[in-house]
Length: 635
Image 1 (cartoon, rainbow, N blue to C red):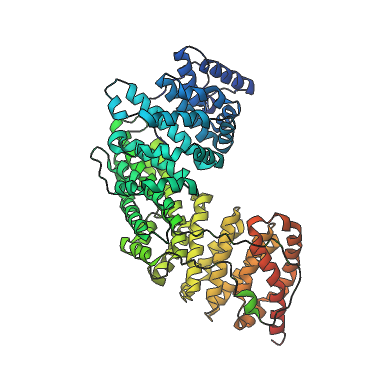
Image 2 (tube, rainbow, N blue to C red):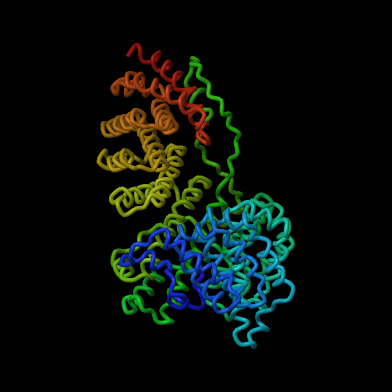
């Protein structure tokens, strides 16, 4: 969570072996490279790695690392048994070889992702990795090695790359976590908490690794409990040699680790300390950081001075820490919902005398409201909701134009996009979990809803799907909360305001975004049923038409179920009968329900997590139609 890639201390020599690097494969001007060429290049690298000559071995490791920046190559290298080939080099007598092999394996794992992780673990990379880390834990003290020229730097680099390799594997693979538990790596890693001995960089990476290792891992948490006091003390520490960004990264990572270790219902004091730290992390003004970058980057182009590069890296570290802070807060306000949903779908069409029992007693979307009062008070005093909201703000156009001029600036923009995405997801959980007054009241929540919609629906071309999904999730949570509060505040909207949402709902290819839009529009129409105005009735009719058209055109039955569930919500009350009659709701449902029932039969075995909504709607829709027929026959 919130992992940041480190810059290598030493740049590689350019094409040290004369073999094709990843740049050769990816550059536009490169000649066409056949699979045979690629295999030959890899074979030559493998031969160098296994050479008895140290210089050749190091050259091969560097080339291998460069090639692994291409994800397809990283996967191929991992599948070729690279763990068996260079795993033993992790415990080589030569520290530079250890460092080079750890670094190569780290980037193979990071860039090859799941397929590479699986191959590395299958070929038992954990055995030499665990052995190496245990060796470091018994005698290594980097502060005392600095006097030996070069050795301390290389040893530190080897250790850091090994920890990041473990971190990557544990973050994405359960077997890596299992092996770490068996090898008692938590007890090994907690020996590196002393900043005076190991320095803030190493302690931060250790904490980040433990954060991944302890996620849903009771065995690791039990071991970490012994160090809880030490971790809390580290939250208060001030490191004179460290930069502001390094201190922020360390304290934010420790906050996440303490949350993993803490039961929210039993230890609110620790939670409150953590929230204060996260508040400090989020208090750093992104606009000021971006302003400092835009004053540097235009003069640097793509050839950076060391001072400029250092400034960029420091600011990016803060952005990464803020992203992690948002993830921690989002997790703090989430609740695991492990309801065991019966996968059986009843095809029977039962009648019901009253619709309320059918529709209103078992809603699928409810406010959790599970955050303890003491924690809520800290949220309030730290102004957490506003700080999270501020991270959703767009970067101004002038800043974007400057940052687009060079590679570092483009990387910063991508990071800001990710930060905004995490802010929306965090805000979604805050809205779902907190009471309306903690969120600033009805007016403030409505303003957020309108502001998000204004930004994302006016120019959807500039939004990637991940960001669009996060933003619409926040809008969905906000309007759900306002609906529960029976806030009659949407009477300010016109059909023209709602049209962009309807348009996006029709054309967006992403199912999660479409479902968010279905729920947003359904709740909007439900709220507007309390407004007996011509404009409100027109909006409700257009939303209803959209929902039923979605049912006709949709191939996935669970999305059809979401649409029908929204229709039943809108027309659940008896005073909606006249509007339903004007819209010819029953006539339209008679055409849609058989399509839905047929798709339920076709897809019932492949519903997965969506079985609950499909089962509920499948049971209720026929009852709903029959009840409405009884109500409306005399109209």
